[in-house]
Length: 104
Image (tube, rainbow, N blue to C red; front, side, top):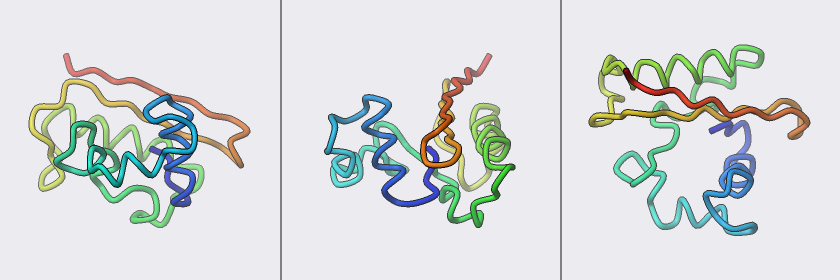
C-alpha cells in the first residue's frame, strides 16, 4: 500500500473498497492489516521505513511482493502467501495503479 503519508494509506483502504468511505482507520484499529491480521499490509514497514524512494517506489513494492511469494523474505516472511497486491499512486492521487501478483 502506498503509505507516503499516514492519511494516504487510510484513503487507499477506502479507495480500494477494503473499508467504507471515511472508515480507513478501522482497518488498523481492528488489526486486520497488521502482520498477523487477515490482510497484512506493508510488513516491510512501508515506504516511510525505506525513506520513500521516489521514482523507485513501485519497483520496491513489487520486489517486496515477489520475495513474499517466493518465500525468500527472511524475517519479514508471512506464512504461505499465494497472492500479493501492490498499490501505488503518483502525486496527490493523480495516477493510481494496482498490480496483483500470484505465486505459481
